Length: 161
Image 1 (cartoon, rainbow, N blue to C red):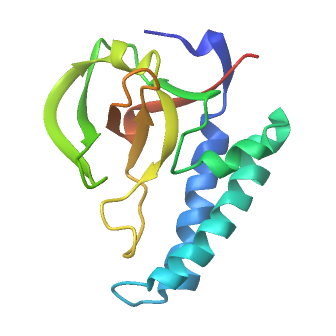
Image 2: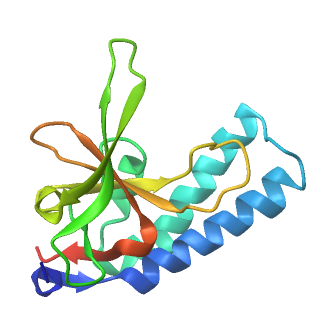
């Protein structure tokens, strides 16, 4: 599935955003502690969105989409496999009755699951600890099913308008 021709390959920009955001969190907010506070996470979220605007969204005149990072998702930003492959290891998630995400380890899944999916956020299992952004969370807007995929398998594409 080589769909990057459907938009602009912005992998370099997303990886730069990931590295800068990680560095700010790990060196400024965490400062060698095992965990940061919820207040620190709220303050960081503001900075993180500003970094996303500056590094990824501004050149597409889409800075208003930064507020959807970690929530509804950024509709014009999607992921395609970094290599020509038909299946990748993914986890699928759905919210339970309390609003908590329940991830299922599903193993190899068809990359066709990514066709409708939109970028939600760079994902870490412990958002209050050291960040490495090893995963990408996507969401299928039609089914609301969430998809978790390792970042190393991803090429990031801003869809053509």
